[in-house]
Length: 419
Image (cartoon, rainbow, N blue to C red; front, top):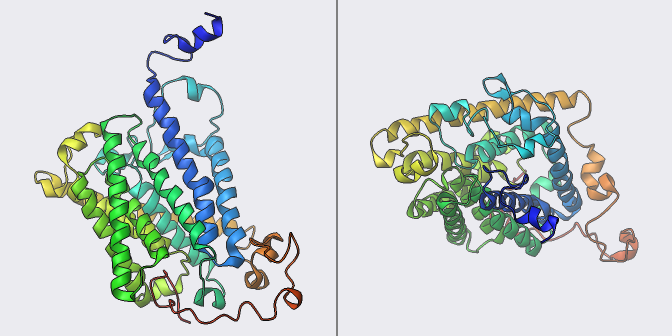
């Protein structure tokens, strides 16, 4: 046997230290790749397809360059800001993490708030895989950013149909399947808890999708594909904080509530709340992520099963449904949610106000009127020729914007505004 072959098979080789479990490490790489596929190409396809045709390129490109920019920010600053030496009680010292020392040694992840030993974690709040850390945070940050950026132009707010429903389903499918890595990778190991998390993730998503679709049929007379995708997302976001901590019957209950409570907030409360009417949340991220993530965190405080909690949590924990100290757990979940909401409103506001000192937060009106062609010099579809610029005097006999009013403006198509 040659030297190279020995290096790859010898369990005590330098690349396989005694503390490294190769199966767990392999699952972590697979899970992280699945999560990456949620963005590339999952969100690229989903966002490009769910928006109006004139914004398809811009929406896809924002998902693309955001993925690249966040990766570079992560290794240059944010990894050690999250997991490095303490600067503040919930903020580490940001610095590059680019040497091999971050790969050849055993990881130590003292995160600053809810994960890996942060102060909320030490206090007893639980967030299995990011219902608060990711979904509640992103929903609140998105709503805050929409407030500071300002609304779309009137024509876009009144009518914003998806440009490709079939491709939207392809992106949504990648998002759903990638969520198995999202929640299944949370225990850092290929163990019993990761298996439970994957099962519950899919049970909740499927239940929520069906409930949302049923509500669309009951109230609007038709099943909406966009509504089904929204229901899928709310089910995934809701189960995330408790994916490995609740039983599957509880995951189904969480899916039922995820398919109904965000539906009510999006379809009914949104139209009655003056603040939500004023803030132009284009894709309803507040409802699908903030409401669903908050709901999931609170339900975890009710439904977390004691034996499952023992599999991954360092202290005896149970939901209020199981008696004992469960009522205190529910209170902890409420307080943690309030902290996350306040932190993200404040931090997002500060970031945007700093950015506004250097560049405008909002595009000029003339670019908002035109869309992709004005912003990028590119358009999503060139059906009238290979790379040929669209000329309405040669390629159509009617103004393509003069379409019949959609029968779904007040229906199941998502967040719409009547101006």
